[in-house]
Structure formats: C-alpha cells, structure tokens
Amino acid sequence: MTDSPDRPAGEGPPRAGTPPGGTAPDRGETPPEDPFRTPSPSAEDSASAYARGYGDGVRGALREVISLAARGHTASEIRLLAQTRLSKLGDEVALRRKSLLAPPQRVPLESLVRPRLRGEGPNPQHPPAAPGSSYLFLEVTPREARTFLKDLLGRGVRGLALTRIPQDLRPVAPPPALAILHLGGGGAPEEGVEAVQSDPNYLTSHVANFWDSADGPGVVHFEAFEYMQSETSFEKALKFVHWLVGSAQSNKGYLVVTLDPGSLEGRQLSVLKKDFNHTVSG
Image (cartoon, rainbow, N blue to C red; front, side, top):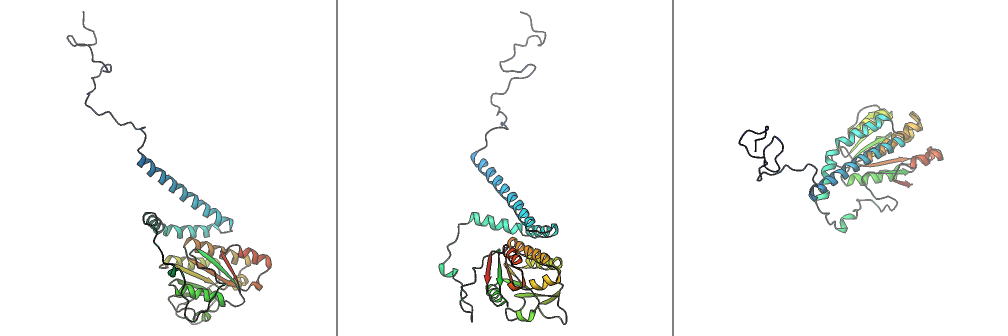
C-alpha cells in the first residue's frame, strides 16, 4: 500500500471525527455554549417582568399625553407637565419598588378617622381628601372651600393660593404654610404675598415652581376664576384650570377651585365641572 499524497509518508489515517486538514477534538474539552439554548426559568421571569414594566410605563406615558391633548392643553403646557413628572420620576420608582418589596402595613381603624379641628363643626358635604384629586366648590362666597383648605393645611399639607383678596385668606393659615399670589395686585409688599399678573401663561411657572419646591404633598387653591375670565377669556381661564387639574394629578397633590356659579352660563359651567373629581354646591 502506498501513502496518500496528501499525508506525509509514515503517517497513519486520520482519526474518526477529525475534519479534513484539522486535528481531532480533545475528548475532555468543554463544548462551546449554545447561544440559542432555552433560558433558565429565573432569567425568563426577570425578562418578562422587565418587559411588562417597560410596556406599562410607555402605555401610561402615551395615555397621559393623549389625555392632556384631548383636554385642550397646548404643547408648552404638556412639555412643562412632562418636565415636572420627569424630575420626580426617581422618587416614584423608588416608592413603587418599596411598595413591591415590603408587605402592606396594617393601619389602625382609628387613624383613618380625621380628628375634628378646634372650632370646626361636622362638614358632611365635604368629600374625602385624596392625593391627586381636584375639588370644585360652587358658592357665592368661598367659605366652604376655605374651610376645606384649612383642613388640608392642618394636616401638614403646604399650600399656594391664587386670589384677588389676600387679606381674607390670612385667617386660614400664616406663612409659610400658605403662600399667596395676589392676582393683579399692587401696593406695599406683604409677608407671604406676591403680586402677580393674571396671565395664565405667567402663572403656570409659579405653580410649577411650587410643586417642585413642595416638601411633601401640596394644595393649590384658586379663587379668582371670574377675575381671570374677565381679564382674558373663558377659554383661557378654562385651559388654565385644565392645566391645574393635570398638574395636581401628576404631583399627587390637591386642587381646590371655588367660584360663583352665577358668573357662568349653563354650558360653560357644565364644561368646567367635567374636569373635577368632586363638585360641592354651597
């Protein structure tokens, strides 16, 4: 028998499984991992949870943008709301993670019953206070709305009031618990009172700064709708209220708006009431 011309003389035939021109594999060598292998159950669960969370986050953001656009918010207002929400996103994620990892605590029933403030009688007409909610008080004078505001401030909630008559709000709470924006005001400056113009585009920056600086929950109290309407228009005042409602929701705060229902037409009042979670008639 003669040697193959492709092999050096004296070299035996190749071992089984040896590729042409190669060497036989080492039987003790670990084969490379299959990149298409089935993932472990734990890895599959982690990937599925991440994908669900990502999808829920994107859907929630898009729904909020669609809702704001449908309510007539301008692009600048939506951008401002988005920036405010982004600045608080880290805290929201940390709170969500904590709620998922820690079991819910048992809350004593007596702690859920609001203690009556000194000198305050029962107010069965007042709705329960819930973060992210908006309240519309329809009354000739803002007596019930201010009582509701005082109740929230008594619980440690910081407040910002937009009014034409700042001296009437002084008995509700002193600064810094309640900061006051005096719409169209002038004269000598007062502690805790800032004179501002009634332009809604100007006021949104003041309210946004309040939400950003509030240490804990906050409440915005607006009792100058009629004045803003007379200085601008019903449509602009309505859009400002739309924005206030959205900002209170995104910041988990409270919005209290009070106005005289006789100052609006029936159709206007009907449109305005649709935005609020609660309506109280005085």
